[in-house]
Image (tube, rainbow, N blue to C red):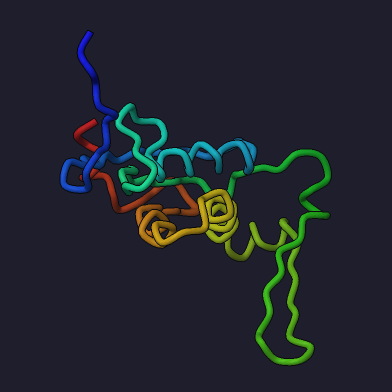
Length: 142
C-alpha cells in the first residue's frame, strides 16, 4: 500500500459557485447555519480550514424569516453609539420591519469563525428583503 498525502486545497484551485436561498417561512438560526456552511465551504469535499473556498450565497425573502415561540418580542438587538447613554435596542419584530437584511446578516456573521477570513466570507453574502435580486445572470448556469 502506498502512502497517500493529505489533500490541501490551494487558493488558486478554488472554484466558487452561486447558491440561491429562499428563507420564506424558514427558522432564522437553522437557515443561518446552512448559509454559514456554504460561505465557509464546509459542504465541499475539498474543504481545507486555512483556505477560503466558500461559495456565493444570495438570500431572498429576508422579510419572511421566522423565529420560534415568543422570540419575536423577546429577542433583542443592541448597538451602541460610543457615547454615554448611547445604548440602543430593537426587538426582532422591529428589526424585521425596518431592516430585514440586517437580521440575516447578523445571524450568519455570528456563526462564522472570528478570524481574518470572516470579512471576505461576509462579502460573498448577498441579502434581499424581497424575491427580486440582481444576481440572476450568475445563477442562470445552475
